[in-house]
Structure formats: structure tokens, C-alpha cells
Length: 402
Ligand code: NAP
Ligand code: MG
Image 1 (tube, helix red, strand yellow):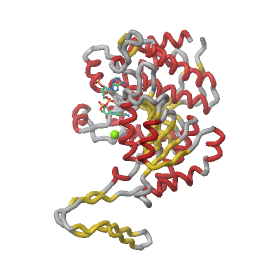
Image 2: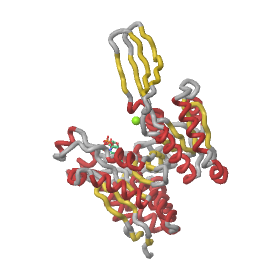
Image 3: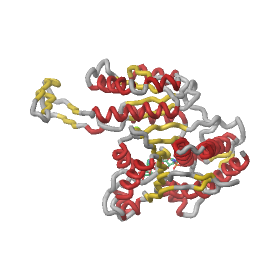
């Protein structure tokens, strides 16, 4: 079999700990034997971020802007303990945060479903993708707790010097206050990323806010989404998908009753809360993929989980770990498929499909890593728990047999 040729390189962002080990194994076992892999490599491992004063993270995001498609390995976000563990010069910011800020993108998280693991919600037949607007609201707020009563006001001084003042509340005793904001430009970018991704994946898009109560703030989200949708309306119709707006509480009720198979766009806080609910209900973090989509259609694919530190420390002691590589493999297939679509290389697209199918088939035949074995419905077929290496070998066998 001849290897599939690529045209444009993928931006490859290497990472840390156990996922860095898996990264190399996936490339050697599942990609390089089949593809003449073209990548522009950026080492986002913590040591190299420290060595380059985090410039490598910025460069990798700029490369994503240039080429359009990236695949990223999980990376450590340093904290106090990592400062001493890696002898860091600075507590570097989260690479994902840096990349997201440069691409101005929205993160879409989708569970990978397999027949042996049943979602906690019985009606769900297809994955639900959550899109979280990751700017502002309560995540960039100002808070105040007072010791006595008084009057709180909202004061806005415009750049031209005009002052607007509004009463929040007059309190006769101590209380708490919170001021927050969002930017029209950020909501607009979010809208474009959501509609773009819905078209790409041919799935309807749902969005909910509490605009009956928050008439101006949430009202602005509803209005801007509706306005941006006008640009996509015809393409949605052609694709046979819809944009559906409803109140957030109604959205929650409908999501639970639904069959799945759509994208749920959420405001920042709703997305934070609902993505944990949806991912847990579908099964395991190790089976969740994530893609950052910029408003102008650049894509960065990754697994939703972290670097699996606990497994890495065991690996360093010489143990073979049963770490699940599936979400990281799907990050690669997502990126390869997108590259294949953009560069019109059908073999690359079908290879991505084949590789995904080989992963699912392996698991559905009963061969899986430990995290899944604990969740799988025993009794359907005998379950065989394997380490990461053996799992990858089983997947490879299935690609070669297809
Ligand atoms: P984590 O790496 O996702 O792991 C948490 C636990 O979830 C693991 O200990 C393991 O449980 C289970 N798990 C996660 N992925 C798994 C997989 N592929 N296979 C099997 N089990 C899996 O989260 P964390 O321990 O909170 O964070 C570790 C590091 O990752 C931190 O330095 C953090 O900054 C970083 N992080 C990076 C990203 C990113 O780059 N996108 C995201 C999140 C966290 P058991 O130990 O019980 O088996
Ligand atoms: Mg959360």
C-alpha cells in the first residue's frame, strides 16, 4: 500500500507528560505507516515553552492562522507546584488560553460514542456538541461585599465623555454586588464560529439565554445571533439544518428529551456548567474531543482531557499504563479530515474515517483501556482490558484489515 500524500502541512503542537508519550506512539503506529505526514512542528512541552519565554505558543497560533488547521497535544498549565517541578522562569499562562485569544475562537466539545457505553440519558442516540462562549460575563466581573447599607449605581463614562447612571439597588443593610460586561465584537465572533461549525458538521444549532429577565444583556446575545444568522440562512436551508433559539430553561428541558445530534451554543457560565453535565452523561472525559474554531474558519483540534499526570508518574516508574488514546487519535483524524477537505485529497478524508472506525470497532469488539472497561455494559460481550500500546496495535490491525 502506498502512503497518502499531503499538500499543506498541519500545524503540529506537541505537549506534555502521558499525552506526549501517546502522541509519539500514535504517530508511529497509526499515522506514519499510512500517510506521508507533512507537519510544521511546534514543541509546546513545558520545558520548551519556558526556554522560549512562551514564544513557541504564540508562533504555533500564528502558524494556525497561516495554514488553517492545527492538531494539539494536551499541555500543562503551570501552577505553583509545577514552578518547582520544572524549575520555571515564570508561571506561563495556559497555552489554550493564549491560542484561543490569538484565534478569537470558540471551543466545541463532542463526545465519541460507542455502543457498549450507554449515555445516562436514555433518549440520547447521537452526540451533543457544546459550544461555549468563552469571553466575559461572570468570568471577568467585579464584585463587592458591603458591611453596611447604601446605594449602588451602574455608572458608564463613554469615550466622548457622556455619563450614564442607573440605580442598581438601595440597600438597608450589608449586601453583595457584581458588575460584568461583554463585547459586541466577541458575541459576533462567537456567532460566526457557531454557524460556521454547524454548516461544517451539518448539524442544527441551538442557543438559549434568559432574555425575558435580562432584556438588555441577554437580549443583546439573542439579537446579535439572529442578525449574524441572516448571513448563513440560505446555506442552512440548503444543508437542511436549522438555527433554533429558545429560553435557556426551555433549552435544558428540550436537550434532556432530545435524541441528540445537534450543537448547543451556550453563554459562558451555561457552557461551563452544561459541558460538564453533558460529558459526564455521555461517559468519559477520555472520549471527548475538542476543536477551536475561529470566526474566519481556522481549526485547532485536540482531546478535551489533560496530560493525565497520574499515569505519567507510573509510566516513569517503568509501568505500562492503560491510558486511553482515543480522544487524541480523534484530534488527529479531525485535523487530517479537515486538511483533506480543504486540499481536496479524498484519500486523506477516507483514511480519517477508517482510523476512527478502527478505534470504535476495537472498543465494540470488547478490547479497551481500563477507563472504558469500568463504564462498559458488561454482559453484552466479554471485555478485555489492555494497555495503551496493545490498544494501538489492535487499532492498527483493523486499519490493515479494512
Ligand atoms: P487530566 O489529565 O484530564 O486527568 C484527570 C484524570 O482523568 C486522570 O488522572 C485519569 O483518571 C482520567 N483521565 C483523563 N484522561 C484520560 C485518558 N486519556 N485515559 C485514561 N484516563 C484519563 O486532568 P488533570 O489531572 O486535572 O490535569 C493534568 C494536567 O493536564 C494539568 O497540568 C493541567 O494543567 C493539564 N490540562 C491540560 C489541558 C489541555 O491541554 N487541554 C486540559 C486539562 C488539563 P485516573 O487517574 O483515575 O485513571
Ligand atoms: Mg467547568
